[in-house]
Amino acid sequence: MTLGKRISAISSEGNNVPHYLRIPAQLVAHTLYYFTKPGDLILDPMAGGGVVPDVCLLFERKCQSFDLALRDNRPEIQRYYWDPQNWTWPVTKKPDLIFFDPPYFSKKERDYEKKTNAESSSISSYTKEEYESFLEGFFLLSHRKSKAITRMALLNADWRDFESTPASKENPDNSITIFDYHRVLSKTGWEVTHRIECPLSSERLSGNQVQKMQDKRILGTVGRTLLIAKRS
Ligand SMILES: C[S@@+](CC[C@H](N)C(=O)[O-])C[C@H]1O[C@@H](n2cnc3c(N)ncnc32)[C@H](O)[C@@H]1O
Image (cartoon, rainbow, N blue to C red; front, side, top):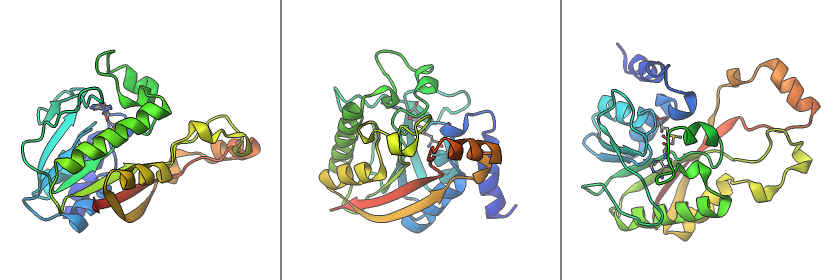
């Protein structure tokens, strides 16, 4: 099987895992290809469905992956709760790259909440202030615990309260956008070197849905952004 087919197979293997817990494997493969080399250690702090460890295996990178929710058949993903009240670092060696794919603010909050409990709640249940302060704490900690050459790859999307709100009526106080991630990274000693746009498949929305959104003047989001940063 060609490398391309093996990468695609990783994306389709997780068909029983919700899509928001499995990012496209190609996205991880490209990140590893451009910013790491075989034998490098990759840290995946919020591993979800485990796409990053899967691609690391294929690309001969070492990987340490963590998540607060344990998944069946994924013993390599260690249960770990990043607790903003008590920051600790579970990684044994300094990583070469951190692939950080946290929940997109409150998107999918209800789905994540089913898998968590009061002591270790997903950051998707946080207020905007708590969410930003979590990011700040995590970026500071990872900056302290990494090497001079470590890269941070942060995947996220603009999160606005557009779901049932016309664009002109959106309240920016309720949104977290890539500019906010950029600001917090810079504030915590990470210099963004690349901003890579990752369009989402247009198949997610039927023509009918797009028409309905346009009629109500709702402006959706059709992409994610990968920010690559190095220690400044
Ligand atoms: C967007 S998903 C990651 C998807 C993953 N990159 C994939 O495609 O396979 C985010 C994950 O963060 C985890 N999470 C949220 N808050 C957490 C916390 N405080 N500590 C550890 N994991 C957390 C959730 O359980 C969820 O699995």
